[in-house]
Image 1 (spheres, rainbow over the protein chains, first blue to last red):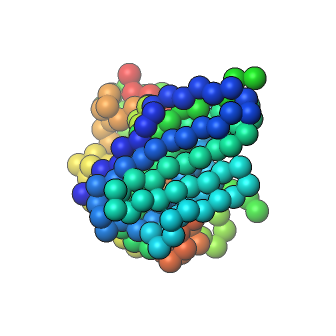
Image 2 (cartoon, rainbow over the protein chains, first blue to last red):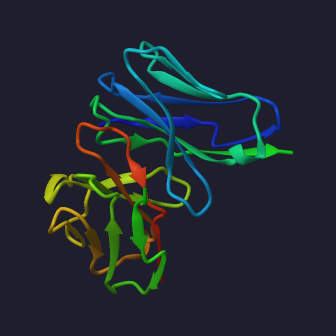
Length: 113
Length: 114
């Protein structure tokens, strides 16, 4: 089955700096890769996603890149703000309709003012 | 629109006791998921419903866990009997249909088994 690894497990950055979180997956048939943000006491919330036919996607301060050959994808957050502090999860799915997610173990991001 | 509602928010029980969690998905969402999130880990899918039918329960420990979605709306997840290793947050999520990939999560139920 699919296995998703995520690094780093914790990340601290100064406000205004960039943050990068990296994930690798094992199943070459995976074709949908969402990123979720989970704040304390809340459920995960989708922040951005990418499909296997696209190499990069950007939404304001957030971007995701995908390298299918190497089977890894990354989340980039620029101009970080304190409200970006949360746990971020990547996930991979074999189906284009996004079912049967396998989540990574998460990255705790702390943005220091 | 209202989000995914879950109750209770917290539950503390002793091992070998039974517990049930309730989920009300976003109105109109046909697909419902239950995930288990152990502290420090990502969510792990337990079961997926499409309307009132089970699509995937391959990771549900069926000797002690059960779930139902009788009318295709609300769902309950039950553990009987509970073990210490069942301590986790149980998340419910819903999506518009099996062909719509965005899953919306509830806040979860934090279960502590003593």
